[in-house]
Amino acid sequence: MKQQVTNRPPFGIELRFERTEIDLMCVEELEKAEALPATPGPINIESFIGQHLCRDYGYEDLPDGVLGVTAFEPNGAIKFVGVSSKLDDDSPSAEHRIRSTWAHEAGHCILHPSLFMREPASRAQLLWEQASDNVTSDRRFLCREQDFKVQGANCGYDGRWWEWQANRCIGGFLLPKILVLKALETILRPSRVTQTPELQEENRSQAESLLSQVFNVSMAVSKIRLAEFFPQRAAAQLTF
Figure 1: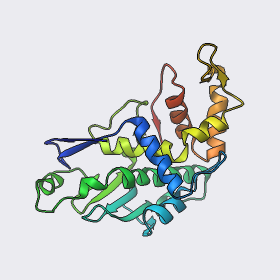
Figure 2: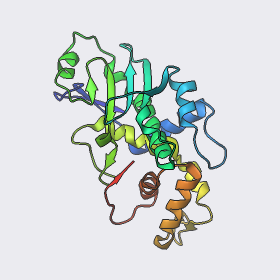
Figure 3: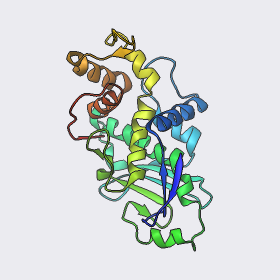
Figure 4: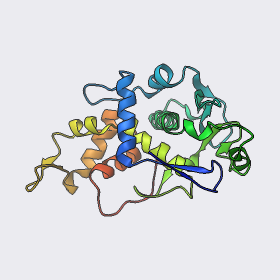
């Protein structure tokens, strides 16, 4: 991770993580919590948060359009993690969205405590007061629907790099690379030149469906994660 001082609100600094660094951090946290399955299957992300990241967590009656919230103490400790109770309608799509939201908030937990570890009277407080409704002066991320939208694998978030990073953790936590490759063993074929696993385009739809079913994630999440490991030429807009 690299840190750069900036004049842009809401933090006055920018944290930069490599994509592979975020994936490794997610796996390391799952392993610490003994929450990484030995074989491909759904990650119990809600239990992982409660047992490993923050004991004060749950479903909250959040404002319309707010899917999740992560709050920090002044020392960077995680104060509360919540998901909107409005998301739960007992449908498979709602379950997928809830799981993605928990993983997104877990991303804030492991990547962003240092953003709030400054005195209220500091320059950072002045920048927070200029912030959007996504980051509040009382050290909370309010994660809204637009924060979960991605325009392909390389997009930013209108400058909201912290949301791009948290969304990277959706794949990192729910679809760890080592388990994804195991799940796709019968579909992947070794490259003729390097012998590394390759995905034939005619098998992409099958692979996307398989990952969605095995890891209990939406097709959108499955498509994005598969495209990260096995890129294709064009990517349409997807949302977690």
